[in-house]
Image (cartoon, rainbow, N blue to C red; front, side):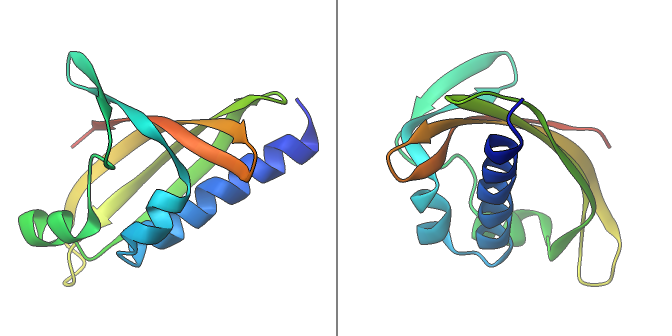
Amino acid sequence: MSDNNEKEVLKAYEEYLAYFLDNDMDGVNSLVKFPITYIADGESKLLDAFPVTPKEMMENKQWDTTIDTETYVHGVNSEKGHVISSGTRIRKDKSVIEKYTAFYAFTKADKGWKMYAVSSVILV
């Protein structure tokens, strides 16, 4: 695993997370290679829009932010990388909504690393 590729993939993921937590879908979309593969429960879909929006999560789940995140690059080469991340989504009153783990696949593009597949599992 190249340290430089690993750092670049992790940086792309961290930028994605910052955009997502700031409800900046233009920023999120700037890091995605569309169509993106969304691996849902028992099926996968090719989508022309990111499968989840922070605004939707805020409204539907009363989600405020994510805490206790753990993220690592699980594998990377010069063309693609995998990121695994987990955390706890909470409301403004700090009550727990859910714990999750997620998988993100990135590909090396002309303008940096772009996400092309995503899947998450809700644990609680």
